[in-house]
Length: 143
Image (cartoon, rainbow, N blue to C red; front, side, top):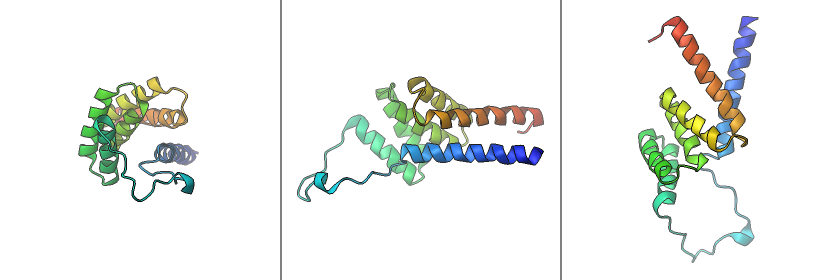
């Protein structure tokens, strides 16, 4: 019966992580309808400041340059502390870097800013898993 609990827990964790990454888009653009596509001669809009940092951070995530992504996302958060999306992305970056305390802090801030969002359930599951990991680590006295 113990193996069933472990399998169920892992399923929930993987589902939560998959939901986080898919719901946030991870840099994927939704297709633009043909009627709204810009003409080839039209220049793309110039991004400046915070928008540019955020776009660069998402590109760094795609390229797996996590330290650069974290640096840029921290700048975005300083400039726009009430925007939940950068907190979510920075939490994911920290989680991938195994900086679980920092990840938890960012995920909690995301939940404070967007407590009832689509991604909130997945974030809560991930936070619960981080808490369980800490408890088990402490019980087993792992380094």
